Length: 287
Image 1: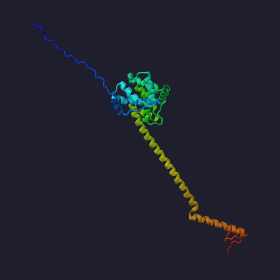
Image 2: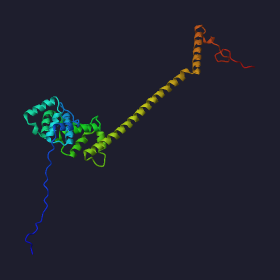
Image 3: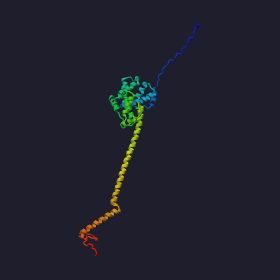
């Protein structure tokens, strides 16, 4: 039998999520928190890389503080000085900056300080950039700066690896490519490049040391050869017996000159040896 008043089944209803109320900060609180981040100031720049670096450093501080768009714009404008402050005042005249998003601020900033001609020159430099005499760390830093100015030039991670590989010197590229497989990510490529730079440098030092030692050995051999030549020459002209022989020969020559000068140069007047064929008397046989 069905009861007249059946008990209704109670189905629990999920509570409605209420979004948290926006955090309201006073200007003093916002300034105090932002000041402790020691964000960089910006005055002016004709170099897009410098302007872009300022934006990057500033955005790190803003993201850490978890600010909304209006607070980000307010803090960023607070760091503008001199020429940049004058530019911001002109922006305030032509638009309502209190409703400006962070993307709007970045767009305005780039339109002012990312000159089109300079940007095109930077992009051309990016296409032609090579490591040269830079270290791997310096070359990678420069590459990343140029790449950040032209993100549309790099379609994927593989394309970035290809461009960076082309940037390195040939002696490093050979070592980097010698692994079982080519590097697939930028992190792997940079890691290989740093190791290759170390071993290539070690090899150059060893080769330089080897050739320096060879040059020193060659120079020492020449010095020893020169000393031996001087010693041999002194022995031929200088020892005691050599000097006496030379003096004796010199005296004999002088004696001969005196005989000739004194009229005694006739060979017949020279002392004759006995039983010499030059004598007129010959030995006779005894009978």
